[in-house]
Length: 313
Image 1 (cartoon, rainbow, N blue to C red):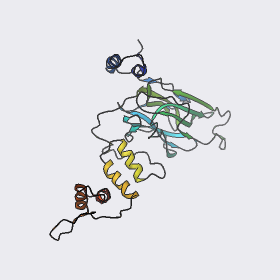
Image 2 (image 1 turned 30 degrees about the vertical axis):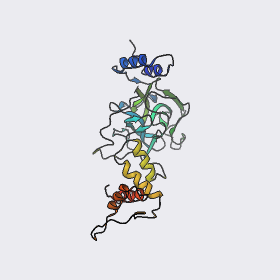
Image 3 (image 1 turned 135 degrees about the vertical axis):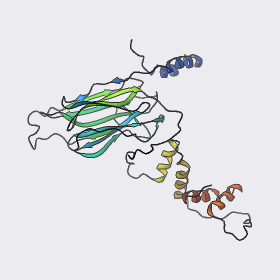
Image 4 (image 1 turned 90 degrees about the vertical axis):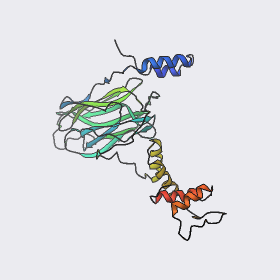
């Protein structure tokens, strides 16, 4: 018996004729069921050995890290935990599949608007050996509100086929294919075939799960950094990103962002005498606390300076 699509609860919520109580009972009945993964066909050539790279339970696919030159030499999935429709963790570690050639590059969904992979277009080419040359990703939000955009949001394109060394002599065999996860599901991993290069890849689709109880943000002791930030990334971008992820670093980053934008015109108190400290100078953080207690307009600037200097309020 086929397992029902996980978007049934979403459709019920949106159906205006259903009363809230009925919808709640329906969704509660479905919540205990596990949605089966669906493995889409691998697109590419017939060479290489089979591999499967599913994300850890509860994580979703955000894109791929590649090693590539003329074609894709190696690939590994970038899996994240989704805390909200467009709020995700840094990518977890995963194994490489393919050869040792090529240079590192990324093809990842936009983290602030549509962070999760929902489909993929792949171009593969060659005569004696057919391998992956291009990867384009369809992306959307996490959860059950996918919009199924007709446009790809991230891509990698290798150089067009040529026969300078005669290795691919004959018909270049250009091929391309598109696949999408079923409605209500998103990509939760990948599979395919690889050897010296990546010969074929396909998506594994599953439940678009959000994590609501977050006890720890980020990775501990993995030693692998997250994907590089886009050019022009600022301390204020880091602050917004940390706030979206409920990171404990958010307040300090926000203070540094505010300090970088607002020139400090006064570090003293306004309109009231300085308290008697017995001749001992007040520290910057003491001044900030005192200003906050008095609702002084200088308080925000002083607090920003205190936090930016490594102090505590």
